[in-house]
Image (cartoon, rainbow, N blue to C red):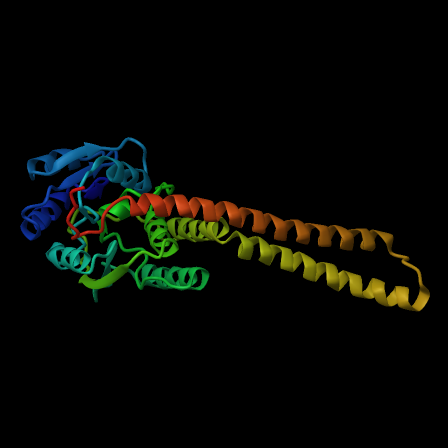
Length: 305
């Protein structure tokens, strides 16, 4: 599956590479409102071409996962930067070990292929994800991935743009799916092909996605941290009031006392909100887990009842 936007210069080579690497696979190209000849070139290359009108890579992935029916899914970008020859190894690892996702971790020495700013941003976001969720991948932003059917059909795609890779990683971490990574070469774009990724805009969106997912998936810690800060502020303001009261048995700064009371009430509300939302999250996670378990693992033959 190849999501594409204005990849006229690269899509033919991408399709040819994956056709040679996986001769028995159906190759889908999902065009996302390209203004060039991406659709014509992809169709002439022998790919099955479909169109997603809602702009954004997340919308394309949502459509691909909903429409395509398979036991094993290979997803890469249509810009000829990912090594198609590595696909058989990724698929074999998924099937042999009955995994749900194998990530093609990018390895390159070409500065133009993987800019230094993107490397730093990827490392920063990867570290944040590991701290927030306990474990992570070495390349959470890689667009080269192989999925099992049960991953694809249990994944509720919510992202709209390039933050989709982060959401995919979090989905695997939250359900504690068996996953793996394989180092794969990463190449420079062919001449005439330009990156659609904005370092700062998309980096900010990915960071925002991580924080939103943390709020959704770890509400006790998220709201508990906010409540802890509010309680700490309340205590800091309350100490002078307490000392004054011990000496004079008076509370001369009534507005400060009211503020302290309000801060402590807000802190308690944050804590209880986190506890209530945590119950909701457990219910949602159970539903996703049941959807995940309704499909067999890759490489397992269906048993006749």
